[in-house]
Length: 472
Image (cartoon, rainbow, N blue to C red; front, top):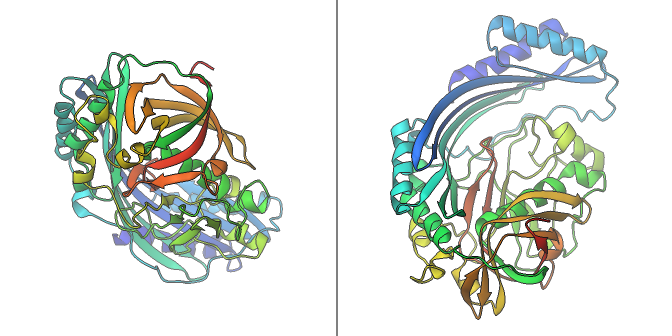
């Protein structure tokens, strides 16, 4: 963290006192983000881009009215214009009876995970991982990206809160393709050193090779093993639609704190302070982040709150405010399903191993191999995509499988399957008695580059509703 962001935040607070008067309540977030991205297609790098942006965001409460403004012009004139615009907007806004007040001064519970080599990695470091991915794919056509991100940020408010932190992220998301069949591999970490392009390339290629001549299966309910990329989609939708404080306060969420809604094997936590997780250790309202247990051994314990949703239900903020929380609500964004061995994470050694040396057997992510061995007849699903919530209250989601589906018979992958459409309530899929097993290690999958991440083991479920073919 440099002094620049902190100085800018304090400067805006001083300008608010000058322009809007001492009665104005103001909170200021200043974030500096440097994103570097190396993209490749047809097994060759075709784009290497980098951008650096400093954004100043002001939320102002004046005379019972609230307004928000932002700027990327972090100069004296730009900051004064931001304060004047936001003050004028506040005076023109309708009253805000739900204003929760500013976060009180509080210390950080821990620093963001920062890795200097990752934050300052050059294009050669990313290109090296791309080269290893392409070489490991053994002549298959490859495409994807490798990125590095650094973020340094500061928060200041007229209530005296002042915080600063920084975080780094590295991610790789890529496919190998053979005769129109794709195999995928993804990984995210706070450290670029954790991203091994060769390991990911071998995994993606093995999946693509094992997808030849897929067969159609009829719709119906199938026992499934979901690999970590597919489980990540469960976490995204559970987070945004279920453990969302705004949705819960408005009774649009399935969550019922104190009720055993999930199988005892399920423990869900949000922890931006965990090693290897990208993300800042404070939120957009200046509330420090802490480890939050959403589900403990199957029992729902909490939902994520910002100050507004917390005030509405008589709770405390959990440190999950985002710039868009007034519309979207607060939701977990460093979300993890704990593996069977709590605390386990995927290592290069884990991910390099395969179930066996046959083309189909090699398609099994090693984190899922033991679960597949326990399936009498069912499906192995690599990935889910294009998912949409049909009913928020029960969290019924529809979407498609992607990047590899296989029929499992007597514990072995026997043949690839064409993609299927599913329609499934995610909470019911994880309900008591529905979870047959969890993998021993968890993999952190990339978020949108803004600090979110989704950490998941493979998951063995008793029932998953495949409602049709990919065509409908």
